[in-house]
Length: 117
Image 1 (cartoon, rainbow, N blue to C red):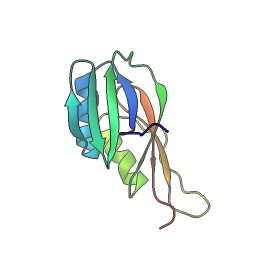
Image 2 (cartoon, one colour; image 1 turned 90 degrees about the vertical axis):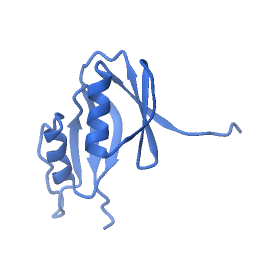
Image 3 (cartoon, rainbow, N blue to C red; image 1 turned 180 degrees about the vertical axis):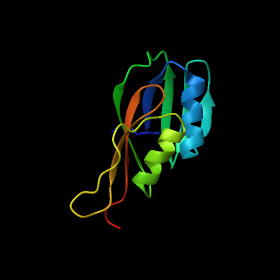
């Protein structure tokens, strides 16, 4: 067995400054490490690495962030320069639990809420 020291999720950015500002302003990310090639951010105990060299093309990142309210979250994403092409929709008589969003660098991500509450 190989011991795992930490796990990170990496996305790409054409504009590192803009990408870092988006995640620090919107999600309260804390910069752990930064150089011209990579920025590592801590969000809720996880590490999001933003790597330079992105092309700014829309790409599904596979990143999911759980928030208390996806409607409020989607509005905040839009306010910070991101997109949520469709408003979060109720499902099976429950409040919305999912919002598909895009950061300013074209990385598609999901906002979800805890459905057990």
